[in-house]
Amino acid sequence: MRIKTRGAPRDGELLHHGIAWCARCGHKMYVRYKGGGEYVCNHLRTHEGLPTCQHIRAPWVDAAVADAFLTALAPAELDALSRAHRAQQQMNAALRTGAERQLERKRYAAALAERQFNRVDPDNRLVADELERRWEAALREAREAEEALAKQAVLQPVSRIAIGKTLNGKVVALAGRLPQIWADEDTTDAQRKALLRCLVEKVFLDRGERDLATVRIVWRGGAVTDLEVKMKVNSVAKLTRGVEMRDRLLDLARTGMPDDEIATVLTAEGHRSPNCAEKVLPITVQRVRLGAGIKMTSQRSRWSHASSLLSAPELAAKLNIPVNWLYVQIRHKRLLIDPQPAGGYLFQDTPDVLDALKNLRDHAIPQLDLRICQPQQEGH
Image 1 (cartoon, rainbow, N blue to C red):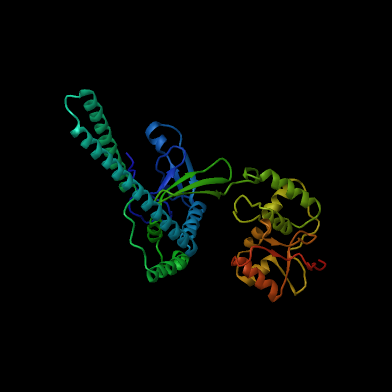
Image 2 (cartoon, rainbow, N blue to C red):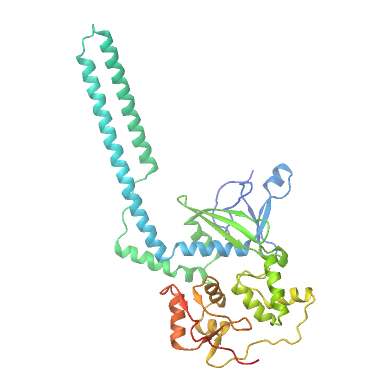
């Protein structure tokens, strides 16, 4: 029988060894370090002779959960958690105070019923029976109030001692450094797993039918976070929006747009390649285009534009940010910019534009509009 415990963190790069569970059958999944590593649920196969329940590639799932873990420990999240904890403490105290007052009232009612019973003339049996019934009912209600108060004490453990400002500042400072510690090459896989288990109780996995896997993180304390993780598939047809992407790709290809620009446009519209979670690769465009029998008469590898302008990859390199972040902001209309006639984006290489983009990146501003005085690319 498989042991149904978390166990101590073991060696091996897969992050959820011991805490990964199958969302389909509810049994624990084991890890298989083959072809990059995966989580496998074979409980039904082992015990009932049925097919393997599911197996799911590990790298992208591990990355998504690690990101959620680090986000949960961000200083802002810790501050929100601290406020929520204080509010919960106040609510628990109010509930306990109400339960204690209710118990006092029930005890007083029981004592009053007892005194009334003791004063009645025993020869008056009807009155004595009625007072005895009332006394017993009052005693029963008092016992129920005592049990409710005891149960509440179990469900609401004694509040922890409040963290002082100095110690709280150290905790926040450590949380701010945690991504750096996590990514440090000197941090071992076992240490990362131990860090993760400080907050995460279980992770339920479901591979899904297409390119999206669902991940449910059960945090210590009972909170739940649901994630959708993009998975690697072997063809455009198996992408959730594969048909839409193929039709759009072929429409652009028929206009003579180069493959790299088509890839940029599709990425900005939220599409991706089967084997890449962040963007559409030019090689994907080329394969789909050639598969449809569309030939490109002339292909250029890059734009020719004025030195005062920056393409999206050039801007990302200059600001030291992921180029996909720019496309995501454009797609969600937080960065407003018109595409060039060929489909790409060009940015003014000025301090004002660069500073504004940094502010958008740092969440100092909610939206940035660069549509005024939109630059135009030069001839090819």
